[in-house]
Length: 485
Image (cartoon, rainbow, N blue to C red; front, side, top):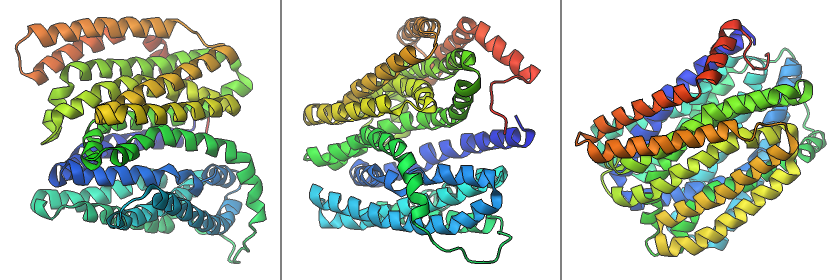
């Protein structure tokens, strides 16, 4: 792997490790505590709603531009103007679809300010991602890393100042407007950081040129649409189905934040797995099993361990983070963190299937999961509220993860048992250890958590010592399974 790429990859991961937790547990938690569950629930439901049709703004254009700029930098710069025009046309379609759907759902008039601003934020983010794709394709990885956290840094500064010095001024309206300002700043910086094209001529816009791109990438768009649906529809349905829907959505958001934090890092790793799997499937199929096994050990096994921790100390974590509704959030948290195992599984085996190009089965599975999720939400939310939405997420993601495993086992030479049985052994012993510590030691909860978690981490390294040793040896020898830049 190219040294420059490696250094900047580590830099990107370091930035996200520093900034994302501050954003999630400092700013988002602070805002929710300041405005209350009901007000934040409105924002959470509407944010999820405007995110549902986000794929319209992409349609595979960003991946096309990243690859195009990497092959021919000058052509990538030249294409950017045309792609910006295309993005704006797609933005019109996105706003139209979202607005018509919002009107059909029956959102009240006082919600439309937030819907409009959140749609604008999605458009600004889509344009920012296009510029980032161009910059990354030109191999300016350091600049792309900076842009990956610029909006969050701006928000941390703006909202963090209010939370520290003028907490009463914090409200959802200002929170959404601050996001708009942050995206404007980030997009402006991206334009400034974009290397200038050598050619001074203004390229003409040819829409037909990109119809082929959209035709080729629409299966990926369809897959993302269904996946976005079953990840985001729960907050929307909570707000719509219950008399106190705004508050229920806010309670659910409190629990979902921990799942979101875990998924952020799992998603980063999945982004690395995709090109690695794609290259192996093309030239070294015999290595796929090793990478899948390694990724399962690094992602799926720890995900279950985190779920075990939340089972015993989730209530304490909720009370630590939030000023209200901690007990109700904990009821949702236990189910959501259980589903984190299936999210991690999807980040390994769903990525493998995507890299292989076998999208028809994956799209059908995602569509089925989406339908199951809607049906379960409609059934469980009226009775269980936030806990019901979490249960719907758990069972629908079970369907998705199970299907991905079956497709992977059927189509690839993937080891079916070692990582699975070893992970199950880890989780069973961890439940016994953590349960014993929680029940029989009368210590401060965070001391109990630290002690129990330390024992389980030691168990994790002992159970998977062979794979971990091999991985370290490969890194030292410079033979890591990573695609060359």
